[in-house]
Length: 267
Image (cartoon, rainbow, N blue to C red):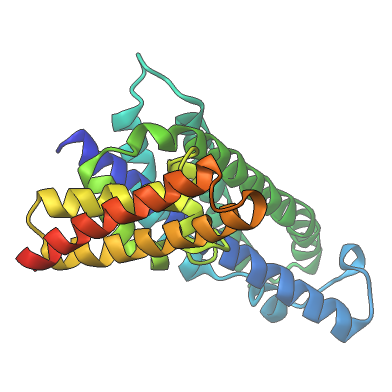
């Protein structure tokens, strides 16, 4: 498998897993809040019967995360960052997989203890879970945050990889939903720090055009042109029509329109 392919798999599995974990964590927190409201007590003092305690955990989602996106992410990360070329991102991913595995084991043990006939044993384990489970969830959340920051520093090196840029454009709106408020456009700010969405749409449009995909190229050029117009209007407002920035953006827009017309011919 090519490096480009590994990089896209890495991005896809990371962002899908990131979104899935945050959804799982959010559901857990919402359920805890619901029970503290129901019983009128602080979460540290909350004591739930087995059926309600087990309802806090989505075991299927946790298992799916570990055996799905996280497993793929870890394996792909090891391919891209082998032992002789280590990176902090790979270390964070390994720790996330390890911590989520422990969470799954704790959830499984809790189910075993919930059916125990010994109430003292259940109370003891409940106190442990009530303290360590949310603490471990927060730790995983922090690890995901660190991994995301490190990945975003690595993104600019992927900005010319054909598979990465085309796949991000085609699937990014859904992939980055719940991760970046600005969706694909905000992702482009990370991928192309100096050009952002304007560079992102332009680069992928050129890639589609070079590959003979006229319709996709024309659509991408249209988005790049719209971004160029938006920035041009802002530049005119701040510095006037004759400002260097405004003139450069106007020239870039015209160039994009010419390439868009070329794409339409082969569409």
